[in-house]
Image: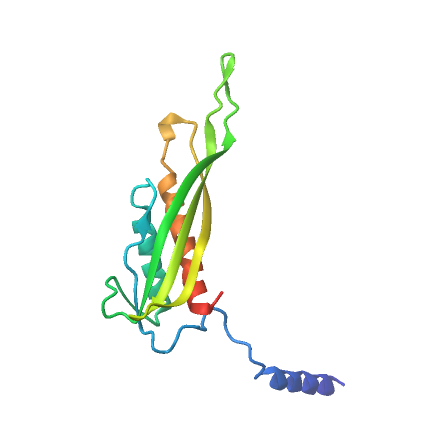
Length: 179
């Protein structure tokens, strides 16, 4: 009986070994001719200082981490070019301090939400054949604002760094894996 169940499990394992499953994140939907991807600095249409640099750096790091493509800044000589635009950025308070000082409540914001809207396009070669395009990418991240002045630390920059990493992971996955 034990021998029979072991035999059935072994048979099932052999039968499903070639079922077509693969490790997620390894497939690519780009043409085989694309070996070098140019990532010029994203365009910044907002008043947020250096947001385009954070997002561009994160894109380059993520593409390099995937290891399959050579990444350059200049589109000349690249097989494809990944361009992007930061179209808007908003910061919205989510939570407020309800601490009372005397007879008044402070009402200071203690939790903020930063929202970034972007557009990206990946074009192949001189003909600029569009391989991927999304004009409505949306990314959000929260950060706290300390109510204690002596321990205040500006959390917006780390929140923007986290947002940039999320942006890069999602864009590179969408471009390479067709999501």
